[in-house]
Length: 373
Image (tube, rainbow, N blue to C red; front, side, top):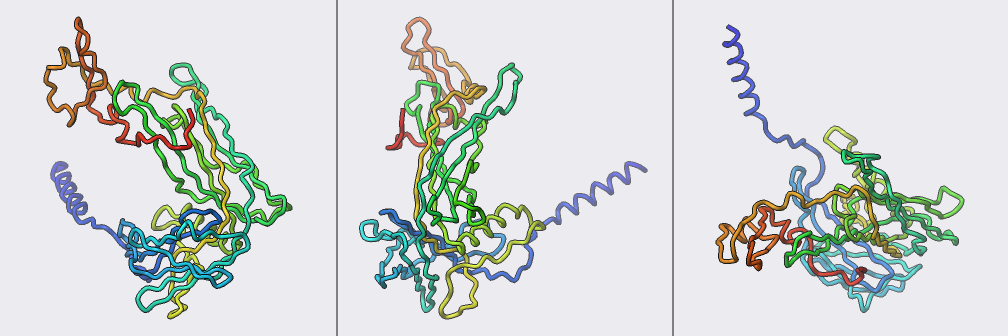
């Protein structure tokens, strides 16, 4: 009898499991909203404005770029700069003709079809230099299984505006690190570059002075090879108005607090862009105008307990001279040690992981122009 009930239970569970389908909740949110992303700075560099249309909830793809727009920026003297589209949906300034300046006010205009979108005039606030960028070693484990400590590091930033003209800050950073394969292969040294994904902002208007002390930017453990050779962090510091700070603060709250369908409900974040034809249209994104300062940090240090990331690479040893055939060579087998030049004991060590034999599977062999040795 017990077996009979067990069989019935298994069949019922199988039917229930087979009926599970993806749930996409019904919302009142429009699915074809204009999305604008972009910032202009006081640097003689190409500025980009990305224009796209949002996609329905449940679509796990990027917004659809909006091509063929007429995009212009007008300054406080009514000088109009036309941006060129390249690639689709990305509109660029001419770095030889356009550069923002402190105190300037800039208005973005986007014309698509018979619709015209215009931003509020945005003033460029000055930004001080990054005062200092530094790291501290952090003990991850006091003593691992081999009786040795393991270390990582935390990177911090200090900044200060004695004139208190910049009260609202935003930062973004780019990591670059060098890694080396411990084998005599053609592509043994590579570099990886990775932009930050988090939002870093600070409001100093609530304090007596515009000072930021020991702002934590990133924590690096020894679970990656970032600290193995040379590591670099480039930080960009942006000035903001209070309105833009409010926008980024709301965006930060949504991105950090919304982890699931029943967590904090995403709020409608007001943009500084409006549709002249329909002022009530909901628009996503923000047109930013910021002065920017930069600082780069290099870390070339010894961190205890950094593991050998390539100990599993050797897969087999093939004995014999170079004439010995290795099946699948270059497809799923790669040579990481070649000793076929030896007359007495010719052999080759092979791996079944291409990452062990070719660093370009993760990075590039092009050495950054700013790199140090």
